Image 1 (tube, rainbow, N blue to C red):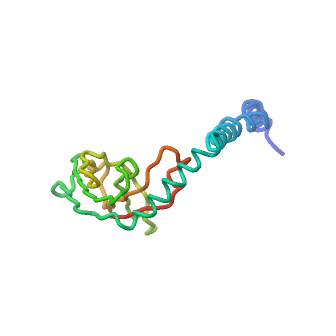
Image 2: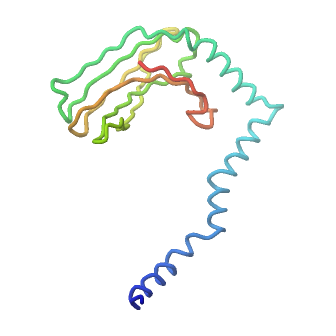
Image 3: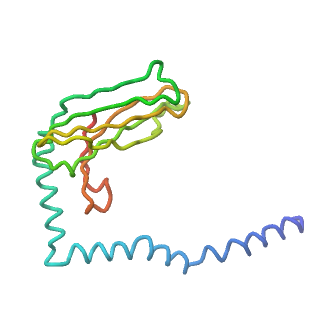
Length: 177
């Protein structure tokens, strides 16, 4: 009950696709993308009597100890008139980290909108640049250009930053501004 052309099409698809989806390829991908990286990280954390693991734990403890003390001193937003597409707007945020190292904090702009079903949708994120440091007072700056028409909400978030964390969400502190 199937046309010979359709059967031939399916057989051709199997012949073209099957070599790319083998157990060996899957294992190679897992080894390359996950297991090798985790093995390297594990060796790094375990080396020198767990020196790197202790360093990360100490960093986290100091960060947590000071996180609630962080104070937002100012937020300056330069929105263009009528929020025209293609026009930059600039944002400067000044924070006093109260003991958190300047290299341990990052700032981002988060742009969302509401879709036709009423759900909030993430449209874009962009990091701020640390432009000035005066002791524990940090000035972050960014500019953002609208890429499409619509109604958008803009928020700013401050996050911990450490190159030794395996993923930026490994340490769950976020301050929304």
